[in-house]
Length: 463
Ligand code: UDX
Ligand code: ADP
Image (cartoon, rainbow, N blue to C red; front, side):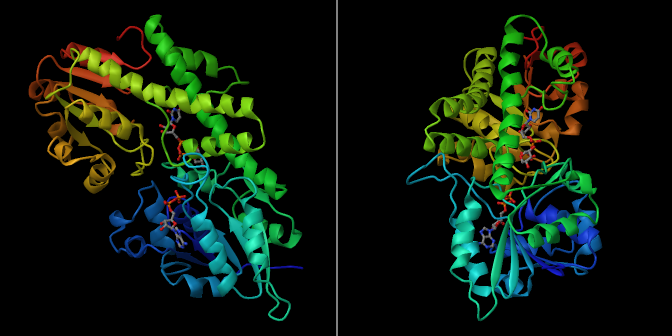
């Protein structure tokens, strides 16, 4: 059997679906790509003329949208129609952790996946390849298969083939990660379907980089890749605390350790803890699966990665309270950066959320500046009660955030925080003025010359 894909439908126009489909459309002009979503506002924003109003911020994305939108990339809420016309359907809907019921706080909530599978079953025609893009628990493909099997029948010649094709893009570098991937992983059990997807990637990815596996190994590889990355961050963060107590410096330690090519230099930057929609969710999922199969020791091992991540955030809050003379009540802290990392407007699981919530609980006033996160999002993430409302302010410049504040805390490594104007800031902040740098971005000597008291994460000389 041979299938040349001419029409793709991607369900879920979010941080994964949006950039992925833009890159496919840009590299495959002969394929029509329809990106659909149940969220009307999101689709409206994707269709905005003003490219600054796209629903997600990702460097390089707006150029691709300009090139492909209305040509072979279309954004719509007509889910049923787009499913019917597609030979290949990507599922990239959200897969958050369950908040109630069995497995709450650990297992993935599959309700969005299931509802997609049923819709695909109802509206697709003929041969359809269904591709799992969202990160999913191992064996979810089986669930999708089981649902779709019920819709197959010989009369209408309907047949579904399921592939796992996990996305490894990181936000902030998504376009580059998609254009030049380290690898593309395709898991499946029907050769024609695997080949059809491989042929799409071959438009811009070298053949050697395309790995083909069984479907379960593909699903598991994605979980494990994220777990390993998160583990590196928790490892280096745990050592950051030790550096502070032993007058050593975490940046030097990272450099020295990472120069061993068996270890590698990337993902060794200490910080306030990992955020983003994937790491915590995937590790919780891994723990859940291990417990399910009776591998309690393995589950406990991976749980430590999350515990250290939570501990790192709490440790920072405690350190700041201690430095600010034991109380934050009625003090003002300028928070620089709110997204979970630089170059994205995504705040999911951002360490800034937990730390700012703790500050508010302590009675602190916060003025938050982030170059890309909308005010509404910050309020949505932080407001817990009406009392806190008056204590929270967002600003559109660094200076306004710092005006009359006692301290600055750098939460995200946005480029503009590397070159703060200490002269200006020293004139508008209250004395004694503090800087808490959780990302190692501040020019420490310069800040010190302007009279700032400094705490630099993982740096024994600035405690
Ligand atoms: C991650 C994976 O990298 C990607 O392959 C997967 O597809 C989705 O999950 P993402 O969450 O977008 O991507 O961002 P990533 O760059 O991995 O950063 C995650 C978190 O770790 C951020 O909060 C970041 O600030 C933090 N981090 C990263 C560190 O604290 N130190 C580092 O050295 C690297
Ligand atoms: P991710 O980071 O995985 O891309 P997002 O939350 O950014 O996650 O995007 C997932 C998108 O999937 C959301 O825009 C959501 O509205 C959409 N979605 C969820 N369920 C469905 C569904 N059944 N049909 C269409 N779109 C859906």
